[in-house]
Length: 310
Image (tube, rainbow, N blue to C red; front, side):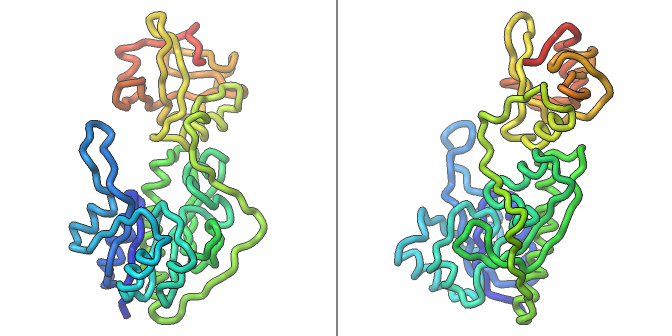
């Protein structure tokens, strides 16, 4: 039996869940998303990915600045929804909103809770060297990702995966999981399990100040750091080109054999020594330039020993 739902989400990660819920016959009474923001270049206002998808489906879109007023609560209740689905909405739901739908609010979170509660679970899992990630559907409470777990799916993290790769794998996996969860909810068959109090970690928002590469770390730590921050904000180093320091973001790299002083270029193929082992850069982005493959970069900017990455 289809449910009448309120959908709350903002970035492109949330779009597959919205589309899949609609495809499976659930009635989306309204979509809540964040306010449109100026685009990166120019002053044009750009709607969120979720708003764009919702308008294509003909679903009413709301962009409240807060949910903590009586008016916001009244408007939320007026949708007469059975439940709410929340995917990377970006705004805390107060208790009165959580209680405003009879079956509750259900969040899709991109980690294996209680590990990586918080804002940047995909990035932090890669950066920490985790062997796996996943998605979980959780019935929300007022805590930070502390609600009871309904369903979960796991996914291995390999050393070739960037944050974008993991994001793109988890988004459709999460959409399918949420559809199954809402199916169970509609049949009164959704079982909830308390989160463990063991193994709790927090995925703090990524700070650009932590993006600089520390070449004294092991090659695998450097690789996971670079991949966990790819494509944004991008782990970076500086190297002298024509006598001037140039910032380069490492978007994709691989582990290779090699040793030397940390930061030293070991050959002319962008192999750089780390504290233990070495990495070879496969994709990069020079400041002010588009992303490119390493070969294309080297064609115009040969770098070889004794160059040193700072």
